[in-house]
Image (cartoon, rainbow, N blue to C red; front, top):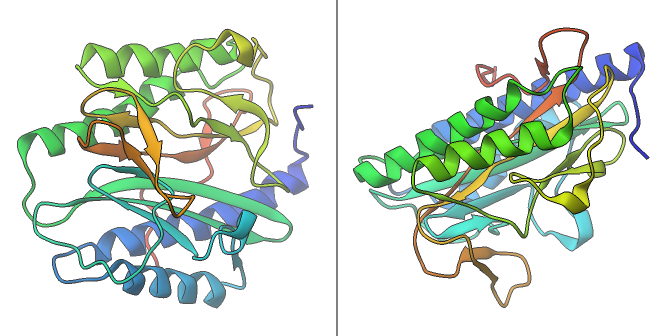
Length: 254
């Protein structure tokens, strides 16, 4: 059942979202040659705790870190560790924060130093595909309107949408109904957007084919063909007008 949020719940989600967005910005600012993914994870963990919140991902279904950090052909759920970032890498950071009983969730892909033209274009198309979908995140539209807009934009630019993993409702739980695919999926139904709905929309886009594979660690997902992947996500509130980004892309860690 899709849960519509009260004004009190929305305010709590704004607080969680603000912290989450600032944590994403902190992680993105740290992406540079010579920095390890573990360093980024530790810094984000400290920041989220300093804001009186808890990292949503730490321990979630057994995930061992506070941030998912996925590099190059890693699509999502990369586990931070000793890996040192190198010039030319692209680095996807997915972070969540839990405060006041509610979650925020957002992601973005960042360049590590100078990157290839293809990699830069992949990042830009992935980010823009989110905003193409966002146009339909308002009353009067239905879920497939948003999902189809993402799919059409990505494929028109020669890239592929990952199908095994999707966006989701968000609130007191990290994952709530409805599922939000980045393509038109009949099984997802046609729920109508209503004010008070809160969803996390997160295009995962591959430079090559859409296929993915899960690594032996049980978490890290890579592209099946070894080509690059990018990720972009915000938590969204459906209002009686323009949608509100609960995880503001312009937020900075203070």
